[in-house]
Length: 216
Image (cartoon, rainbow, N blue to C red; front, side):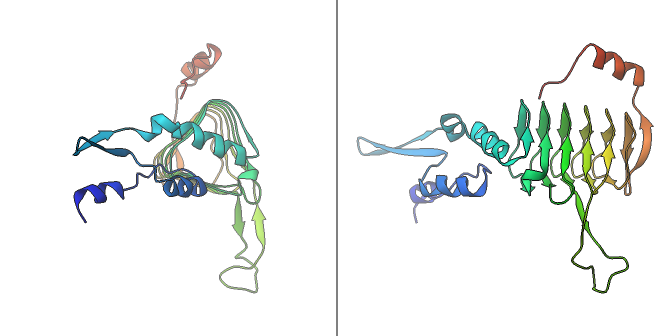
């Protein structure tokens, strides 16, 4: 196979929801167009993202699947929502690449001005492994609502266990495994996550009062 056909058959991954991604592939839409002109092969690179507004399409499709979703919410590529009808998202929220949220069970509530780094995992249900007659767990689903309050920053690869409430203004360090509630304005990290320190409360309240919010 010559270089021309190798290029033609290379498909750019836009990390859209699976069904739409397959539809685009079937339509033979690529990030490079090849044109023959006067017997010579000419190559012209065109960003399909700009032509088709891929990011806008992705945001639109994700929002439709959720129970509720506010304004100025950005979804990066590769995100997976399990039972999205159990997930509520506020305004001005950034969800990083390959995040995985499960609204199955108690559901997930996310406030305003929240930023999630890549690969963040949030769950809202668990299996019953204690006082059970089956191994490793029985068929009981333990539902616990998981809540992320306003102005929270959650670092890459953090994991939030079912039933946890992360208080307003908290910061969750990268890789943290959060198994219990986090106080407001606390900075936590580790496995299991513990409070490392608190952010400056006076500065936080001043910025909040002046409505100085980072728009994602």
